[in-house]
Image (cartoon, rainbow, N blue to C red; front, side, top):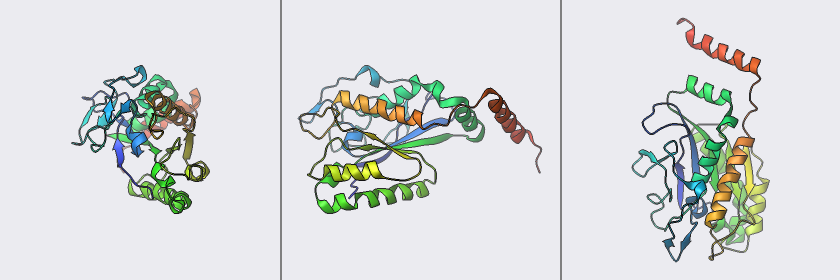
Length: 255
């Protein structure tokens, strides 16, 4: 029934130091425990191991429970998902992968944002949820329509009608209807909604939550999918025309 243990954490600001006033590239991470992160958690204790792919950076920020931008460190959601023990999730691996491939973002995205935005831009929603909807057949049967409506309503509420959404097809579930929910996730047909498949990624001994290594791999998969869906870089002539267009736009005298 699309039960949310936590929802819509603004987690990532790319290429911006905490003191900078430059526009932020913001990603929304939402879903349930596997998005929150349980990598390295055994018997409600996190082992404290942070993989190299999840190391902090001054250019990667998260929005804290107090609604302040702070440097992102693992576990990302410890002050938000407070009723559980948090471990490694896919968020920092995703952010570091985006930073490592920053040239792929293209001049159009960066220049248009800097020219037209005074603050930040929400680039995408990363969505990983559904384990609890595998328990009974009714929830599994209704999952696709509910998810479809949720994404549509979210875009209206933000409002960002064309918000890119990357969802994760389940690797595990709490009940017997995993494949029915997975089919709904893989079969969702909304514009600018894509899917990465977590099936086969390593699970913790509880057979529900992704291991630390699997969370890292998932973060990289999400980053690759986001970069894949970006517009192709402009040709040199097209980029020059776009630059001139923006310059003319902001240099025109008031009407």
